[in-house]
Image (cartoon, rainbow over all chains, first blue to last red; front, side, top):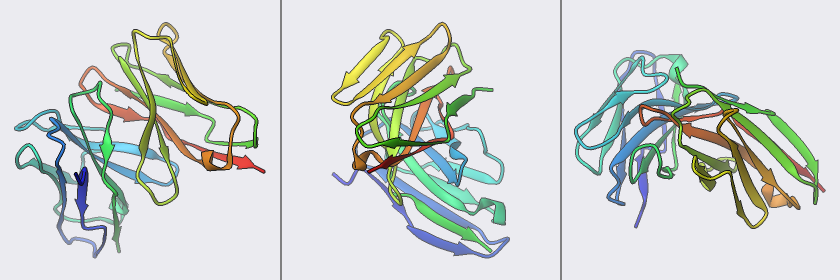
Length: 113
Length: 111
């Protein structure tokens, strides 16, 4: 089992460009999450999906959209990238909402110039 | 909204000594409190977790304590070793099923 797979691993964008970060899990988990990690700021929740067909905002949703394509896949879209979105993005999944451990992907390092 | 505060932000201890990291949370409905370890350039990985019906949990050199009345929980690492050097994050679930993280503690073990 691969666990949680994120693509791409690295990306450089110019301000105003758009892109989609892909995430897939093969553990049959119900819940999926997107976090961003900035130095000294810990992990901040962008969006999450408690189950297939539902998505909800986290702590810092502005500038992002998500799609829970099916049970396995949860994508994060930046419509018009800004330098403030330079960060490391982690996707995670868990068996259930709230009370199950998160399994993280390896992260996507995004730089917006 | 929900908030998790973590202290200290950096911690340096002598090899063999104990390290303690403390967190407080704001949502009284929180029931699940995991701790993650993140090595440089790697993804966070779960090291221990505790649920609200338990006051303490141990796993070898690692222990977590929970005080639901005071809304705080702590990570204790005994007999620290060089491989314990990393960033540690506490987290708590919320009534909306989100998992919110603290800002992290960078732990350094001095030889």
